[in-house]
Amino acid sequence: MNLHHRHILEQIQAAEPGRGPTTQRPEHLGTARKWYGLKNEQRRRILLDFHAARKDLNFADWLALIDSLYQGESYEERCAPQTLLLKYPHHRRQLPLAQLEAWLGNLDGWAEVDSTCQTVFSAKDLLADWQGWSALLASLAADANVNKRRAALVLLTAPITQSDDRRILELSLQLIERLKSERDKRITKAISWLLRKGVKQHRAAISAYLEANAASLPAIAARETRKKLLTGKK
Image (cartoon, rainbow, N blue to C red; front, side, top):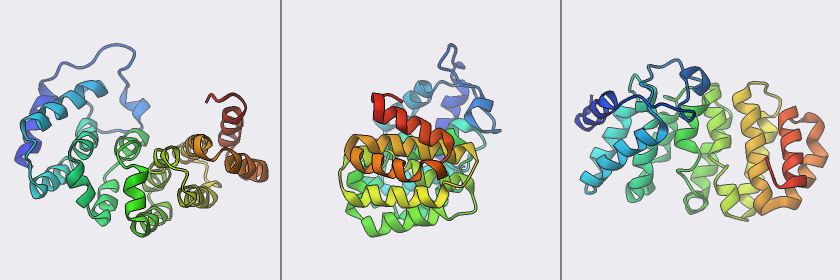
């Protein structure tokens, strides 16, 4: 185990398990991993304290730490890289996309996938290397691992709200077309999420797509996107 990883794990193990309505049980997180019962904000605080004490962590050590965490035994360890990816943006921008794809193979369940994919990578990140990112997302969408297929969709949920660039919209719809026949909730709910997020920057295009494809989309995606278009709410 990486020495920095060991330090973080010791902090996780020493923390008082969270209490209250925001504490999610493992069965709700889609994982069967060891779970220490920490609230998300407790886990983030541990990682923020780590960053505050080690702002000068070099790229090689940062990479080794995250690689080690993605092989951890617990849910909290597998979600910990989210904060490290966000708080070391210079390192994140150097990250080989092949490494990211490999890391995504270590995630299981919607919550683990979303911790890395929901808000970490921006439209600016994708557009700076569009060829690389579009190839990565297409590869993820075709992967036999359903968690990687979910990742392909969730990775676009922030960028599609941040930019009106047609490439992001068109790739999103291409991946939805590829995956819309699946019935796993990890996919159907991600399709709904991505379509609804697209309304902010691409209302007319999303509306036209829904009108043309509602019958072939997962029912939850068609229903929730229609509601978003009509009311502005989920």
